[in-house]
Length: 219
Image (tube, rainbow, N blue to C red):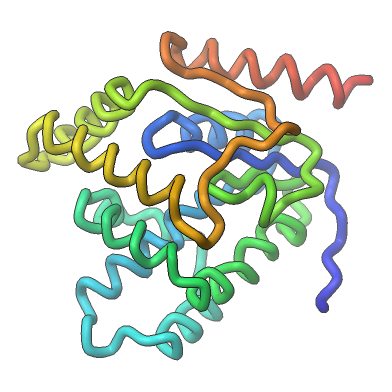
């Protein structure tokens, strides 16, 4: 098994869809100079490729893509559509695909470029599967209605024609899939800090996280 070098800090974040984990991970990344990876974007990229390349999509196809994957590949706004999200939820249940994505996530977690002081990754199984030895583990959540409204606003900004009710149904479907899948389901663990973003601004939520991190970092 390949050995990974231990960097200064690892931050693992799990959350249900649209809870604000990505926003917080970006703020953490910027403030503490950490490499940021939204692990869900890996599955969204593969979902997008499957939708566009039904005939070519295979384990071999995925394996080749993972070997050449760049962080910039995960930034496309095309990956944010509801169709891609639903397909990503299906793909994420495939244990073979998860294994192929695992190595890329491990590289980001434990071998970030020297310009970074560590890494922060958000997803569904990061705290207990990808970074079980992370220095900080967070579970960020909010009510399903709040999360649906956030996602709805994101999609409207992208000029997507979709109703709030459709987004709500999609979020509920995604939650059911994420919490109940047999392979690496979304779950709370005892060693996670629970952060509710329900009635918090992005800034106030970050300050809660920062307070927790600074206490240990400056100890």
